[in-house]
Length: 377
Ligand code: AMP
Image 1 (cartoon, rainbow, N blue to C red):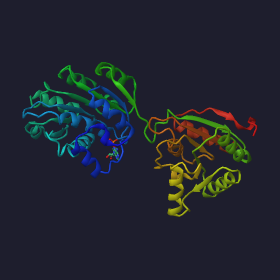
Image 2: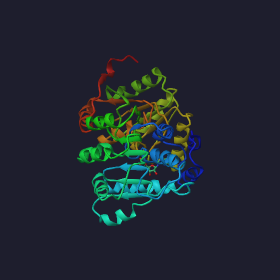
Image 3: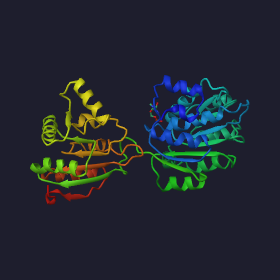
Image 4: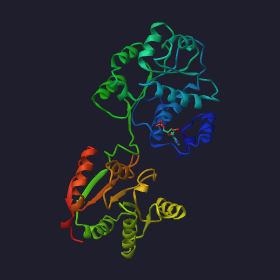
């Protein structure tokens, strides 16, 4: 799927190309068509998922269809918790706004800086990006009006609520026209966010996007206790028995990754290892073959646990535990990316059991431990 299928204005497609956005990220695939249709959207997504462009592009496309007037009415209001985020979001709007048939001037307002210049500048603005407190001050001095508001966006809604902006937000909502599009983005769907989305959104489409790290709820996680000598046979049994076609295996050392790959090859399972001591060329080749589905098993050290980007990887197996609990999440997060669910299996020897408990405790996860020694293979 490419950005050109959405029906976005040509000027936006040109900027996407210049900026090196090749294909839409999962949240963009889901959100852009819905927003263009005028639907309310609840997006569960973190920074890094591409959520900003997922609303900026369609919102600007909708604005492009109308000619703005010069007054203190804004068309789009983005509420967010911090000035850093406000500046960041403003920049994304400004970047993609260039070249639109009807320009949509963008401005960010937040506290901690003098209000007078903001009051003056708030004229002929189409997209206003604001933190709640400063926005209410500006409303109080009649610097901004919302009678023609089309779209309200809450970005990082959970953080807005955690920072205690609920009352300010309610006050702002009461000033907005009832008929409008609402978009709400939050990294978590806690009780506070649920309350606000139930009150704010009309029959929303819910988009839940798994990001690379941190959120591994959708991944089926299993672990087997197994003696060190039986790890190899159990590994081969799992791959063959479940007919796994694309498996990423992690080991703790370079030596082990070579050893595991060798053993698999000797047993008729096509595997290559990849680690820091391999040449860049060999690494690239192995990774490309694996990504293209031409190599069944890739055995890697933690070198690969971050950053490897494979569209859909069904299986990750931890042959050995990573040292750092965070690396467990990075490894396991290679599967079940985006909308797809994946499976992560960890082989735990008696020596590793304590460390596995530590990982689960630190990462606040709980993984059922099956007894691998009872499996016949
Ligand atoms: P965000 O989650 O909105 O903070 O975006 C994270 C980063 O991903 C930003 O640096 C964007 O410029 C970048 N980005 C967003 N969408 C894409 C895409 N489809 N292709 C490449 N980069 C993207």
